[in-house]
Amino acid sequence: MDPDSLLTVKPIGRVILGRARGAGGDCWEEAESEIEIDPAWRDALDGLDEFSHMWVIWWLDATDDAPIPLRVHPQRREDLPLVGLFSTRSPRRPNPIAITAVRLLAREGGRLRVRGLDAFEGSAVLDLKPYLSRGDQIADSPYPEWLDRLWQESQ
Amino acid sequence: MDPDSLLTVKPIGRVILGRARGAGGDCWEEAESEIEIDPAWRDALDGLDEFSHMWVIWWLDATDDAPIPLRVHPQRREDLPLVGLFSTRSPRRPNPIAITAVRLLAREGGRLRVRGLDAFEGSAVLDLKPYLSRGDQIADSPYPEWLDRLWQESQ
Image (tube, rainbow over all chains, first blue to last red; front, side, top):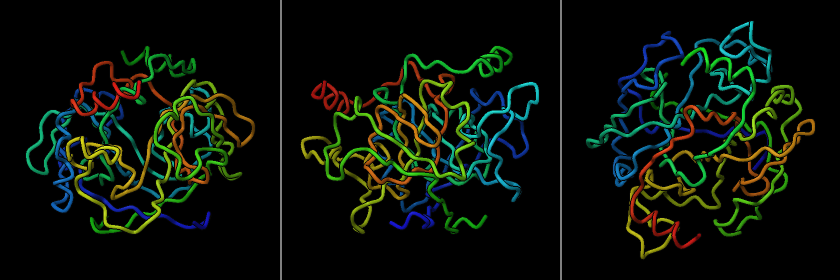
């Protein structure tokens, strides 16, 4: 593969019920959303509901074409340190791919009802993967002081 | 956005030391790998080493152009049930995006030494994200019997 080549991806479905665009970035942990998977891929969902949780890989379509910053203040808070973009989950990234672990509540045909998805309504879904405790669940994962501050505040 | 539109992504770096292509899919948990991030994005790594773990989002470039199956036997084992593709981490997916949680061992400039990456050497890296225990770490995540069998065997 040519290192400079562009790779292409294509939505397999959409978030049809979710966070309103422009809504805040907090408090989505308990929110319920719905995803609709395109008919062509519905059979590929079989058995997913035997897992309690799954990953939703979705597209963070930006609302502007401004350049991607290399360093950001987490959650745009200037009282927090300026850190490298890859040290954050900032939505403005070189490749706007988001990963969110969600609780799978129900499947009906191509529709999945989930809890904990922070995607905006209308977002393109690129992939679904089972949550695998072996590999995905890191028991002990220290993190920076600035993130501890953020989390303390939003408890 | 047109639902049928193709979205494009571009590598931000490569796996420069990793699993040999054709090597088995098991036993990478303890393997050490190296990622090299392109100079344009190196400053975006600042602060990442304050996290113990991160996600590597990488491109599962397939070795063939065969159609993507909707159902698969996990790990191609015919003694395991045929399940929907999205119920597995099979590398052959509509959008060949892999996510792997790794231990970040060291950063030197644009080079990251990690443990637990299952990417093949030369794989394109699309994104790096900090592992966030709040959100990424699901304490209790039941899974199907077939996966239990697989895991029991590979202990």
